[in-house]
Image (cartoon, rainbow, N blue to C red; front, side, top):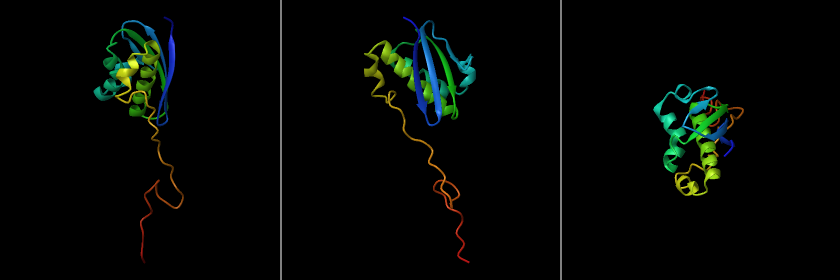
Length: 128
């Protein structure tokens, strides 16, 4: 099996994932995965597809991710990995789909409107 490449997105984060058979090494932007995503919550999110499909430590993952913040990037990586696992074995889809890992989260930041402080917040109203 050669390298499988997929893309995952979340908010403004874009993750390009390259998966090869290996020993479970995850590299994010040429850094160790534990140093790039330091919190246990983010690490869990990235490893979730492997845990659900019982393929922990069977693939090496190389990730290029940019844009957004830490959570958005972690969830973008999760989507891309889920897509790769579905391409490797179609039966993985049954485990990932009910958990919502194959759905691109459509929620984006609402734009700021003119005459307002933020997207929904208004300037303070002064009666006099």
